[in-house]
Image (cartoon, rainbow, N blue to C red; front, top):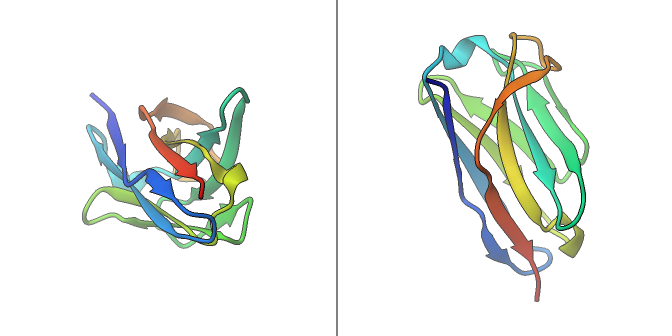
Length: 118
């Protein structure tokens, strides 16, 4: 059974940083692309960042965010820097359907809430 468990969210002041983690299990983590998406209050899902299976190819919607992965630890990360109130959202990690960085996602975690407020 595929499981994706996010952690690392919380309350942070504007300009602060957070590192989100996603622990994966139930599949061969290093064989699949992974991504992060978010959902702000009252809004739809927004793609944030993606990384290929080997970690060599990444893509992100915002240069303040950095995606990475540790295939030895079956863990995906998202570093969030210089956070702004509009970054407030539930952040979800998602498993891609192949190793290609922009593969469609087929599994999602339950999310971790990031709140940016003074």
